[in-house]
Image 1 (cartoon, rainbow, N blue to C red):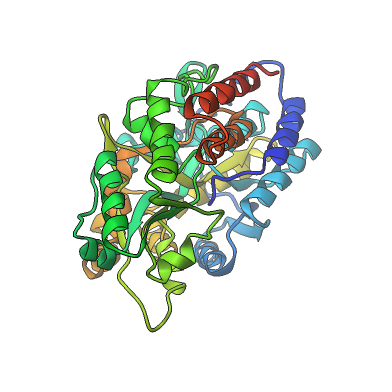
Image 2: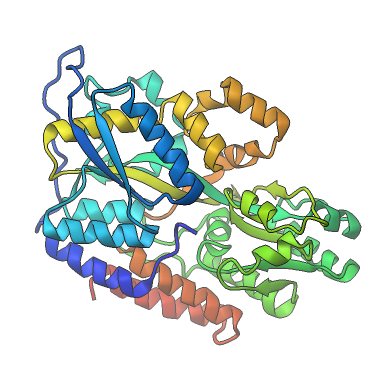
Length: 441
């Protein structure tokens, strides 16, 4: 999963970026006054570091080739390894002062780190320029995706990065097992717990197999109860609350009390689910092709997909995937060229093509009316499940310290599920560690 990080790497990277950062919060680079009509496209070659390999890498390269064939700007896309490796290389490049022109970034926490280090320019300055988007064009982007790319700059919500490959957490289910147990797809967390108990009592299937961490299910449950992990200014832990206790207790009850949830590591849940041995699983919205590929040829089923269950404040889900950033050390014409490529890459035609090729969600509302996407949805309405859940999407906290905080919360969940600590004690221990991190200790 894109969001998971190595704790040791996060600590080292945080120290490096802190050394690179200015003593004060960086101010947004002010855009140059622009004429009513955009200047001619610059004839420059720009570098684009990315983390897309395999089939996805091929499809991204196809888009780059298409762009290069119709523009003066030439994009040189280079695969830099996994998202962790890409992250590590960018940090080293920032330290060495030899950054690419643009790169993929795995979510708001990394963006916040790069911004804190004064390493990137806010995309907002290009959006507001003659090369940018008017309000009507901007409103075609799904609001949750723009929020995911925004940080407060000088007290104002500002687009610092730009969306590209986006997914979210969904519930996967085996409809044959649900039919055998006589249960419907659960719409609330209480219904979900009851459904697991019914599957356990009426079938031989494993009710739920999943790899628990802060994203599955702690944060969505917490958000659906009206709680949050951190304060709005990212200075204090707020998860040790009644809502946080309910969120951690819920998982503990499934694993230790009801014994309806099988805890796995990594993607170890995937093969048993694909083999028809598991009723429910949870993963990102791009997991279906991998599940289908893992199915035995003599025993296939139509993989069910549904939004995560709702709480008193409705359904909530984690927003995952990568965004795009432009680096401040590159020349102005390269920055502009990077923006023009990013803008083209997220036009309706391209976002539809990328969505259908990759399984990521299209970024624009208009994409759902595009002929190719409509045809795909008519053929299989499961492509709409994630899109319909976007209204409930909640971005990963944009704290530059999140990559040190996330492992602490992951350990909190694990300690409770293993019975090493009560949910309340696990929350209290994690709260102190997180507050120490936020205080710079």
